Image (cartoon, rainbow, N blue to C red; front, side):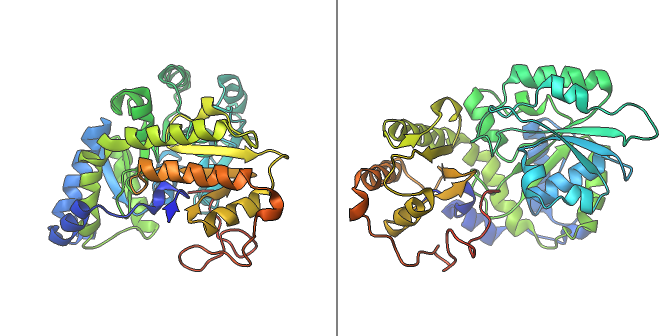
Length: 374
């Protein structure tokens, strides 16, 4: 099985499993877990922030960060209309925090145009919610893993500073962005007020994310984490692999990018596929099937799964994500399977009656899980 659905499917490395078994633990709600303390201190140093906190998920990380920035109910955060916070996090900031989301159009490269941001900022008027925060995403999931340039981020910071607005970065895959730009991650995180990043995607840990920023901000996030049910006990067993994510796994992300690029170039050569290789910056490859393809995207995904290659439907097209558990040889094999399917006459393709993921859940169809947010 070649699983290209997401980098969330990565399994802990042998070193991570050993670290989990041997982790020194304590009750983290009491502040007694030494492994969690080490992870938080290392994470803050790596991204160049005063403090950091370990949270169970990226969604909780973004939610607690937005609420920590937006102190009063009825305030408003500016987000991109294609952002993960807006599209895939169950409107938590509004439902749980009373914070409205003001969306602006997202460019193909993941940027939020400054002109659109200017129009979204509310006047200081009793009839309007107070604009309290701007959220950006880097890399950008729904834009196919695009990386925001440092020039854009600097211009955004200058704009936000002039207005006195903080910037929160949904950096679920920010280390992929740093590798793609060839910079230390602090070159990116230094241009925002706060950042959330995942340990459980390309960095391979089984669970968890980090929120980092100024100490008073992290103090508020800590209280919100407890309120949201994120207070954990002997969680050093999960923090231990997170330490290895930051010390070891960040060094191997270029391999995932190289594999994605080989896959993208191979797909671009197929006459039945539309793909913008200029937007393949990291480990995510998105493409569409042309009308000339011998089968629909839905059937194509099922046939690939029948042949042990797993991809997902994404924004009307198809997405494949490279990661630690997929080798370059497997990526080449996946490409060969994809091209073979698309080069077969349609009458020779046998569609499976029922096709499921490893847990028996249908991959596509009415009973399929929602996978686009991963």
